Length: 148
Length: 382
Image 1 (tube, rainbow over the protein chains, first blue to last red):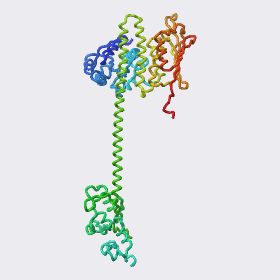
Image 2 (spheres, rainbow over the protein chains, first blue to last red; image 1 turned 30 degrees about the vertical axis):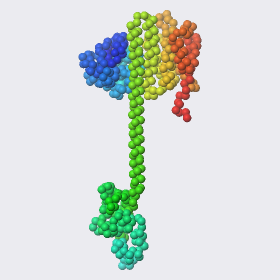
Image 3 (cartoon, rainbow over the protein chains, first blue to last red; image 1 turned 90 degrees about the vertical axis):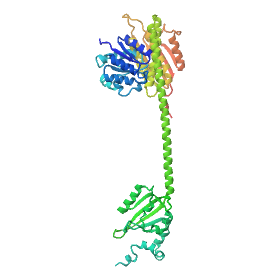
Image 4 (spheres, helix red, strand yellow; image 1 turned 120 degrees about the vertical axis):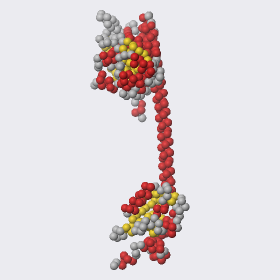
């Protein structure tokens, strides 16, 4: 059995963050931090160790989710998955992120994405099928899903 | 010595000016050149600075000078501040290389006014090929130049107007796209919020019936969410691929419910429906599939409820047909017209002007929906 994931949530909507936390916990993982802006995210990233950061693009200080992803990517202390209703705003290089879960996601969509990510983080590449509603970045596509 | 060749000296042209009436009268060519309306001059490159040695009256009329003011001078006095440097260089090169040249150049009259001169220069050589003169004619083409300039100006103005209008339209389109993205973003976020609220409420509920009820509600909201996610992911937001949606929905419903013992049978043609029909069709399909999953299958001796669920989509002649079937217990106890799910299906069918039919498939139930779905390629039919 793979070790559960430590998850960081970067999301400005409290309701969504709360519910996402419950989903993460229901799936057997833990949430180690919650940030609503770029500044908060930097603080949490510097002080906490997470395996996966779910990052929304629109935060309280604007569309700074990309900057959050770049900040995390520079430090290489966790991996980023965007979680946004606006996937078209993600740059082509994905700022180093694994991929994107498009909002509105379903409970099952998040649950299966968590399973897929757990496999990918602990023992890459993931063995279960890539969940619908989860899109891999081009860079991870070649590593996690070659030839698909 | 050849008498004929010496009868006229090589500089007979020169003499026509110098000797005026006497010689000119006897030479019809010289008389013609003197009298023509076309401005003409002759220069002598063998003399210092290639001066004008002959100028006809038309030249004097065109330039406003007296004859004595031009004879003996190089014709660069016609040039002025706005004469094109490139054209001057071309003239210089033609003189140096002894070639002929046709060029438009802005020249100046004695009174300082300017005119466009369609200049033609041609070298004149003797039998031995030695350069004797340059012959030049001048034609005032100011009118043609003016209309050329006007056409160019009109073209520039027109192109500028087109550019401005294009920029305006592009800006308007961009504003519209931004607005669409903004609205799309809000719709999706709000759907996510609604799902989250229902989930939280469901977590807090202790009553099993209430939990089930909220669960069903969540499924419906998630079906709507999936429609919206798919709709705005595609390039054309006005079209919706209903078979792709059905494929995703079946796999999501089966794996989410953990019912791996149920075997899905998909027979899906690729069918595009207009976006405004996406939500009701999606909700109806969701309702039929979840209904079958929940009620069609009896618990077997191993504690599981196995069977198969089929969904078939086809589009014979302008119709969209959807069949949802199962091989479960049949509809004997599933005719609950009063149930909310059933009412939902019937209302949506009415909205879509769909015929809906429940058939006993023995074993199981087959629901057949048939609705008009216009021509598929409107644009291609003319």
